[in-house]
Length: 204
Image (cartoon, rainbow, N blue to C red; front, side):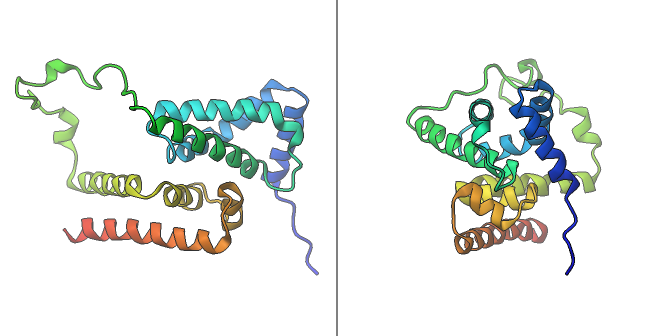
């Protein structure tokens, strides 16, 4: 029989968790650096805007710090972490849906760059200088992002966890608390929708 080789990444993360249990701040900083982007992406599938997603991530880390002694290591730390985040994000998303979302403060672009009718007084230079290939790539990315936003939240979460973060189907089932069969169906539907969006853009 072949003995499974130890996973260096898993061993390094286990060491970080041990150091976090001991109250080492540097371990928390490193774990946050490893998982922050994934957490924000996943939280954004349940809540209305980036600001609320950041609050969910902060609340999740607070819960992790308070409950780290309850982590038993049977699942990967990331799986346990994201399961906590999903529960927080769902609760926050429900409460946010009961009130109007608050927009970002201030305009994203200086108002003087538009004429009285709201059109650009002069287009941004880098837009003019972009190559056709870059415009096509940008258009395709925009189409995909738009299609991703239109997916139901659970399908969107599954695509992000599987195809962006590279998690296994078993890990995704634990994080979202769904069956393997349900995960396969939802992932197939989500990928089919995204593929149709890409094909529609390319064929246009």
